[in-house]
Image (cartoon, rainbow, N blue to C red; front, side, top):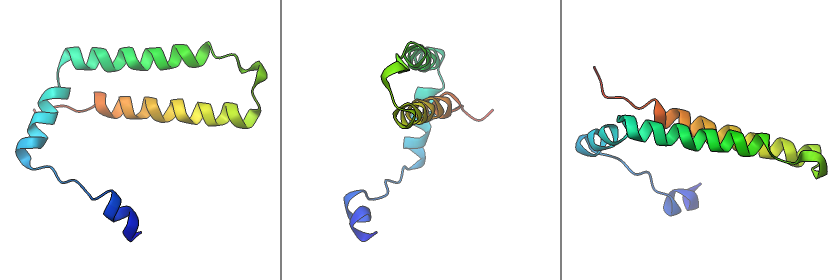
Length: 82
């Protein structure tokens, strides 16, 4: 555990940095871009030729795409407080 903490220390953001991130993600053009990325992921997944893949490989690919979509969903949900 100590090695991981040394290699990847926790990065704390101050309030100004948090406000900048919220301002950057809380824009229509960024949301549109994130939705486009998600659409591309889904399209590529649906067009995937799974005939030559084992069930295990296909399941791993599905989980990977699912994780990417979850990340994009989290980024799209960033909004400034009302």
